Amino acid sequence: MKRPGSEASHPELAHSITLITKLCAVAGDTDLIETDNAQVDGLLAAIRANDIAGIYAWLLEQFSFQGVSDASARAYLARYRNPTWFELSTCVPKANCPKFGNYWAFYDCGYSKWTRRCNSPEHFAKCPLPSFQQRNGRLNQLAVSLFLFMRDVMESDFVGWVNARLQENASPDALLEPLTSIIGISDKVVSMALSTFLIRGSALHPHWRKTGVEMIAIDTLVHTFLQRSGILARFEMNHLYGPHCFREEGCAGVIRNIARNIDCRQFNRRIPAYAPRFIQHAIWRFCAQEGLNTCNGNKIDDRYRCRNSYCYLFKLCDRRRPLKVAP
Image 1 (tube, rainbow, N blue to C red):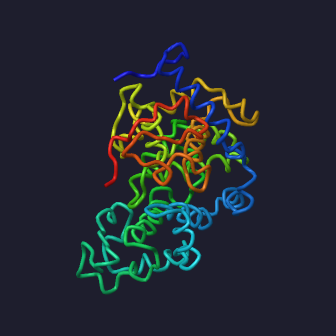
Image 2 (cartoon, helix red, strand yellow):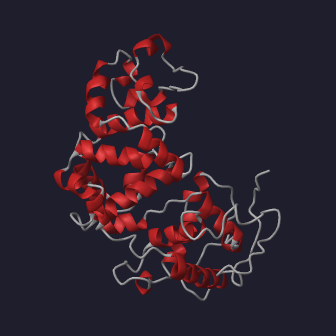
Image 3 (tube, rainbow, N blue to C red):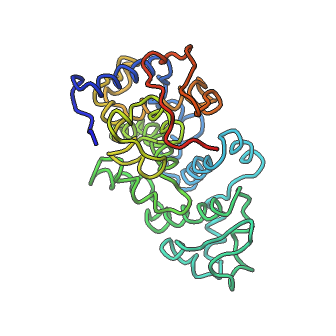
């Protein structure tokens, strides 16, 4: 396995820097690291007041965008609302199931919306979970697990918990590791939500910004781009999509190493020089249908090398086939 060096003199790194710099120039969202959008959805007001109910509602909505397209998740949320902090504050203490007693007891609830079963069937008749209107049982469990984590682990003080964790260790893992223990939360969705939360909240807590811009959300689009472009192969880091993507010897490590050699201030002077989140998001935006819709399975037949000679990166891209092609 080759590890990307720290200087552009390394051939693999030099090629990747050139390719990703061109990609960021065309696909980078220069407003991504701004804080103004927090005013629109009320997040900044919730952070300022340390409003646990408001922060819970915002996080639960962000965590709902998984397992389906953003458009499908958005349509479902428009039709069925998530349970609120106050509703859970009422129904959780009344639940007769011992798994609702605290965060640590709830870990193996096992509720399934479709089979209407759980790991404590003797208590199912009075369980509050079936009354929630989320898309599946995993999201129903997430709503309670997140509530219990914020109540029992954070002691209903989200802002204080974040500040305490970052005071001990300002790296993204200081927040991501404990939060990924919540039922139903993947590495990708928690990284994406926490990055947005910290960047927007840095208008009130400036030290949050550094951690927020270092968080990377790897989804299949980002992973597959790194494969198709040949970046992973050049560093001998090819792997299937999954937890490996978030390791230093996976997608996340490659993006961070490339980011150390790209001064993102060239795209917007308000962006920090080192901004892995900006680079990761530019890759996603280059690929996603909601973005530039250029490098994805709808545009490329992965049985063959990419033939889109009109692609902005065509001459630089290695145009490799992904490791695993869907049948």
